[in-house]
Image (cartoon, rainbow, N blue to C red; front, side, top):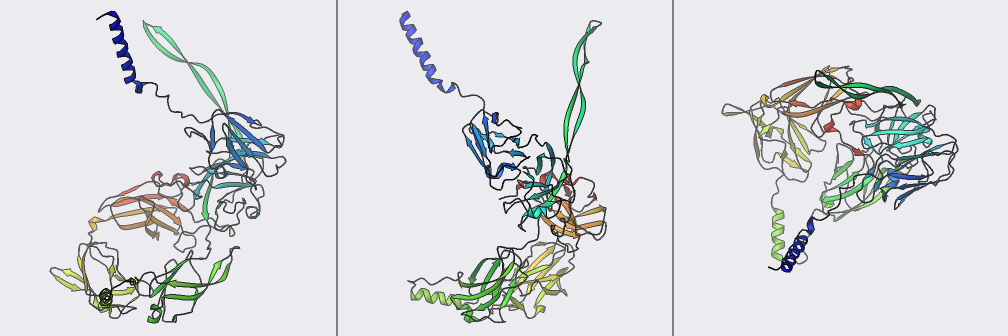
Length: 620
């Protein structure tokens, strides 16, 4: 091969190799994980004697401002929201309210600023200026927890008042504000020297004052005086020295110098606020419906003290109508007893009920409702005679009354047997409902008492001291139960066996600081209450728990109603105190686990196990 041909072949090979490896060329550098950096501000951060309403911040890259209205906090609070925009590498803030004299302004961007490409967040960036000759620099910090669950409350407003009267929270905007972060922590910055009260407010009204009864709030009786202290400590700087002895080199650390470091410590820095929403009922009708011909339902958003008054316009409505009120008193079901009412295609009636008006007062409201049956299938327009005959014959067949129950093959030792029905039902002869115990190979009838579980006959209970590892049989004779519409039950029978004691675990708490007002709640892995038990003595024994992992909390039932109650600002009442057992409890079958519980020993903010903490934004 000639030299020219050789050079030509090598050139072709190099060219092909380069083409084949194009994908291995430059792929870009490492991912940018650096947040944007402020390069310049107009005016300079910390400027005094500033009288303009515009602030401009220049960054080293293109930035965005996310959800500025919610995330960015301007303090003192602005009645007319500031206009915050991002233009390329600039962020501008335009204040609309008139600037106050002798005031320090703080613009807290929180986590709203990020770079445009990768979304890297510039965290906790704040800017301040003063209309006076000095910048106020004091701070107060703390934590906001949900009073009932001890979960941190995020993005809730924290405000302070130099007016120490109780009415200031109701009538005046805050002096200075901030918002809690994702972990419930807050810092109110640039405070002037003085005495203050501090509050939390989920500001539904948007006016920086507590004037809506359903707003989440927190308050404390304490008066705070913010201060700053200099914390001086010494840091030792070392240097290495090599010493040779006996032909062996040793490295010695020698003191090079001692540096004095000064840190500013702002107090108070451990304010604990516990948020709650006061018991408040904004009453209104949510919806009305008629799924079946013989009943209709009304749904309200809150429990009712006074039931609606119904005036029927086109159907019989008298004292024979059964009214089913839900356990929470927020819904009503009217069971119609007259067949003329069932056959009415659209029920029309006037309803008088109490509704909350715009001033939060209950006023009498009158509505006219028209309810058409939605649960009955209409015949098709082109239905044949034969199809119609089949449908009518099917409708004439006996529909047995269904008996629901809570039984299972393996039944809990402490549970009553429950019978439940879809329609109001009467049991004329309770003796025909029989519970039998299996003794050897024979079934022995037991003497049991049947009791109603509600006022209209939808639920019945049978209580008995069950024996572990014993078989029982429930039998209901035919036509024992008859509902409001003449349907009766078919014959029914079911066997069940009570669990053995070896299948259960027992949890015992010895409660320190016992007052007699403690109510203990056993929780599952999702922080859901599965058992509640009043502490009648310092030793609380919770029996018949399934093996597994549990948690516990207790609350102090100050008013003795066995319910956890929130606070009331007008009465100056805090929410009833809640405490968590600070660890997971593992229960094993046929074991008793005893725990010593001093619920005041661990600080409240450290009590709730980390795996149970739910960080939820308060505002939706």
